[in-house]
Length: 92
Image (cartoon, rainbow, N blue to C red; front, side, top):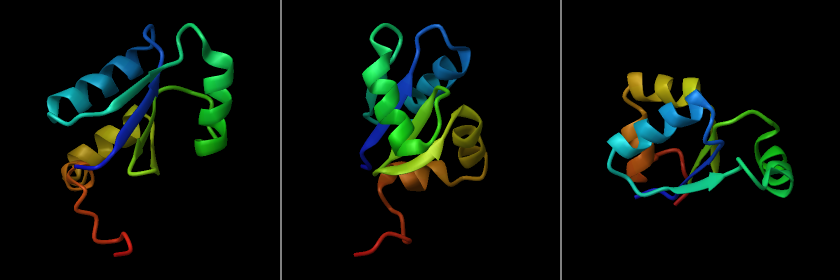
């Protein structure tokens, strides 16, 4: 399984959709809640992704994007491959 992280805020509907999509895939992921203590974590997220909006998803260190990006990968059949860690584009 790929190492998956999601930065989210509890009040954000797109965050909730992204969390639900990842949960529905049955994968383990690290959920980093930016709701209450956001400053330091938001700076970390901004450095990693260049974005300040939530959610932001990373799979094996690769920035995937937000919910729309995650859903598009799922619709294209690519999300399961990434989540399984079976990414042929990674160096061996």
